[in-house]
Image (cartoon, rainbow, N blue to C red; front, side, top):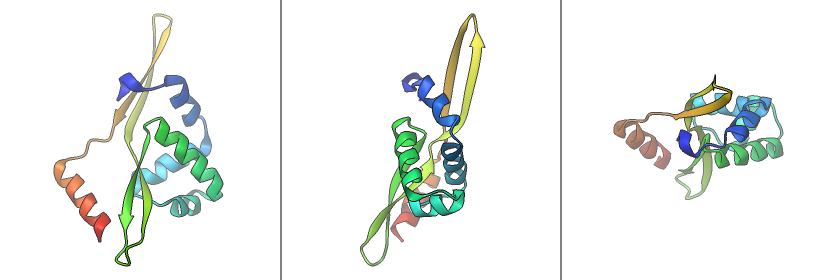
Length: 115
C-alpha cells in the first residue's frame, strides 16, 4: 500500500480532526455515513466530504450492507492499521500499513453484511 500513497495527502488528511475521528470510529466497527456523523458529532456533508477524501487516499473502504427488505446502503471501515512518518537524509517518507484480515474474518464480515 505504501508505494501508491500520496504522502502529502495522507499527512493533510491526518491533520484534519474530522478525518481522524472518522478513521478512529470506523476502526472499531463498520458504520454508515449517518452513524459516523452521529459518532463524531459532525454534519452529514462534512462526513461525506471526508469519507470521499479518505477513500481516494486508500485509508477508508466502503462496503454494501443489504437489508432483508432489499434496500442497501454503504458502510465504511478503516483500511489502514498504521501510518509511519520517517525522516532520514534530508527526506521524509510516509508508510501506510493496511489492516490485515484473515480469510475467516473476511468471510464473516461478508456474511454479516448479507444478514
